[in-house]
Length: 246
Image (cartoon, rainbow, N blue to C red; front, side, top):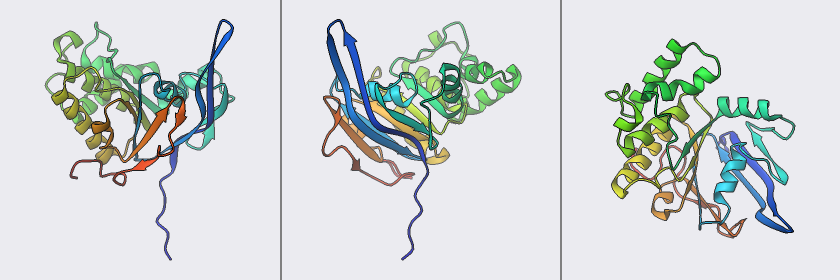
């Protein structure tokens, strides 16, 4: 019997626990959560407000540290990395998209997208050229020199996506990327995420409160009160397909 090779794991969380202390009280936000994101896979993380899904995303993105448990990037544990090492790893292997675009208003779209490359000390001309290529890929060829205030909400989110993709990350972490958009624009944005996933093989971990959009992902993880639900690991379509025709 010939076994189908599995995709390498780009991001993994093992037995994560996250507690916060508030005065004399201790609040446990995550309890023994283990997840993995494989190369080329789109995973939706779904849960009610306060369930712990954004906390999980922050831990996966090395933006916070767990109380116990650990995170692996490309199969390597990050426990011993200092903040400088974590920041460098984030810049090179992870991308981020948030509900609010967090674009720098005084910079054009192309300069916003080039910023992660400039931070890693690439030459500005080369960084801008790479930014132009990615902006074209997300359908903003005609808007590259526009400033955030001159763009629609959907266009600003496309710029934010391009900024996340410009470093060619193994995985993009998106926290409610369509939450600030109207339904039509949200569906258009999610279709774009699916196309990027399919065409470029970029893995995505997407926090969303919208089950209809989550159903388009390859796999859905359901978090309830800080724990993965019993039916948390639901499979939809295999990586590379998404919920729309290829």
